[in-house]
Amino acid sequence: MAEEIAQNEQKNPYLPFGDRQDAPFYGKDILSVKQFTRQDLEYIFGVAHEMREMVQRVGSFDLLKGKILANLFYEPSTRTSSSFTSAMERLGGSLIPINEVHYSSVAKGESLPDTVRTLECYADVIVLRHPEVGASELAARYANKPIINAGDGIGEHPTQALLDLFTIYEELGDPDGLVITMLGDLKYGRTVHSLARLLSLYDVQINYVSPDILKIPEGIFAEVEEKGVPQTENSTLEPVLQDTDVLYVTRVQKERFEDPSDYDSVKSAFIITSDSLSIAKDKMIILHPLPRVGEISMEVDDDPRAAYFRQMEYGLYVRMALLAMVLGKS
Ligand code: CP
Image 1 (spheres, helix red, strand yellow):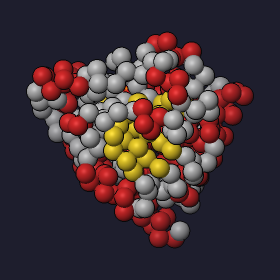
Image 2: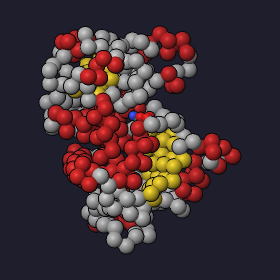
Image 3: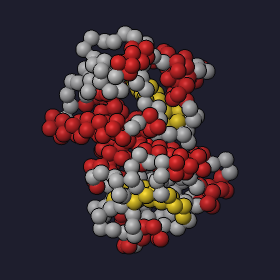
């Protein structure tokens, strides 16, 4: 722990009065799910659960009063951006929103390192979404304040994976023993890359279902295999749906395709309907990081197993927990 505190002090030498230097994740960047142990996850979800209870009881409270978050988004976002905004405001802090970088000095050609070094003069933590893999790591090398990766191209989306796993814990309990089936665009979907890595810390089975051109990247499959997690790759859902406890559906990411005809060939490959769920367990959940563009029919929304709207709310509590933790208040 002493070593961890020393590392934190290196990252943020000016420890503000009242912050807990010994708090886990104090001053840390959140860049990849690879940085978490199972013990870390249990701690984060414990804090997130407390945040949920506090929001339900009092709505908002002043844990982060005086703290400022810079939300720096180079790619569109509804959920991640607004849930971090809500998280900061519910914790009594405030916000610098840069959700449209074309109106910032980025439009004049300012580099990412210069932009984050600017924002950290005014903010205590920076949430960054960027189209390039590794952008958050680059930003973290230049920033002294914590950087939270809110999605780096087709790389990772660690806070999404944390909220996905928190949803599983809250809805189904401990993930050990569960069968998780990931469906759709597994090649470009950064949320599945992060979630598969996180799940490899558990005793689960993972099924991947995708068109041939959108298979899970070999590197991620190999990483998960190395942890001893059984995985299957499939081109249809039916053979694995009956045993599935968590069906994780993803959008085919049109914006990542170089050839539009490739997108057209797979855009409607899978559509979940009430009929297709007739063979699924009664006690299972359907998740989706959202937005959806037709891969889950709207008729499914009324099925109690459809947990994707509840999943968004769980994201608020996880992001409240992360902000409190990196700012030394939990
Ligand atoms: N799940 C997710 O990242 O959604 P947004 O793109 O709306 O932030």
